[in-house]
Image (cartoon, rainbow, N blue to C red; front, side):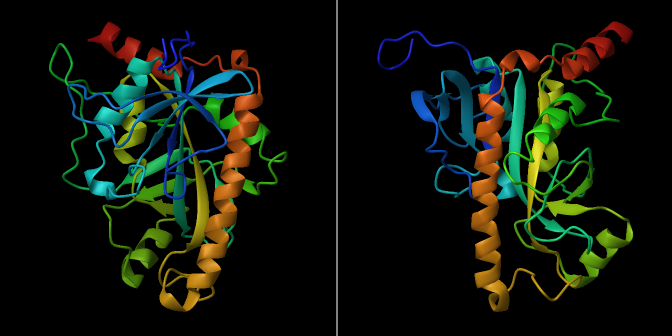
Length: 277
């Protein structure tokens, strides 16, 4: 039951809003909860929302006021809160920098791989047997990525269908030397939050995909648009436009038949692990 005494369905899809997506006013809130779980308090209220009679869950990764830095986000609590709400699929939005000249600001990328360059983050759930060695050869759900890609054109999104995201600790940005190193490894984009969020979703058997919007080039790669005071107006213009396109893409996806979300790859990986141990 929601706060109005009405019965609501469990949300099949959960959205984690990144920078610029702290709120999603296009969705009608029908229930709001910020209950702590055994891993702490989530970043913000878990909102059960309605759009064209479709029920989804939404949570702001950095909090509703964008007050939580990347290395202090309660990733475990966030993912478990969505799991307990009934979510089977998670789409995380995130802002990224480009590590390649051909991936320019204003474009989007659907990561299929990540490289973890963070440290000190709590990155394992506690299970009955202590912990699990979860295979992560394919960290992102191909099914959900394909579903997102199919709606990119209708949302006027120029999107790269696959790419490797380098996940750095943050909250500081890269030095020019670091950026050149990341680029030399042929990684595509850089971000601060995809790990361990992506991993935790799979560990709880939730299919996960990310919509990564590119707002700038990482330091030392292109002088035309990097994060510095000289390019603030340009950056903010791209950032705002990307946020709008991200919402359009998500709304188109929510409007599609939820029955077409039928993958269980994350659940199957966890199940296979336990069957083999």
